[in-house]
Length: 115
Image: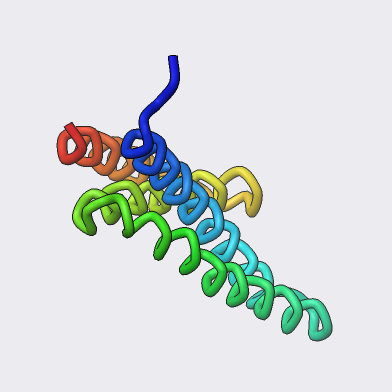
C-alpha cells in the first residue's frame, strides 16, 4: 500500500520530531557530563551538547511544516521521560519512586493529549 503525499509528509514530520527528542536528550547528557568532566573534555562535551541542541532545530523546523505546533510540543515533551531514564541508565543517577510516578503521569498525559 502506497501512502499519498500528505500522509507521507506527516509521517516524516513525526519521525523528525522523534529525532528532535533524541538529539535534545543527547544534548542534555553531554552538557551534564561536560559540567563534571576534567578540563579538556568538559569544553568539548559541552560544545557537542550545544551543537546537538542547535542541530535539533532543523528537524523541528521541518516537522512544523506538516504538524501543528501544539501536537509537535506534545511529541517533543517525550524528551523529559527520555532524559530522566538516560540519566539513570548512563549516568547512574537514582530514579526515586516519586520520579517514576512523575514519568508515569507525563506518559499518561502525552497519550491523553495525542489521543
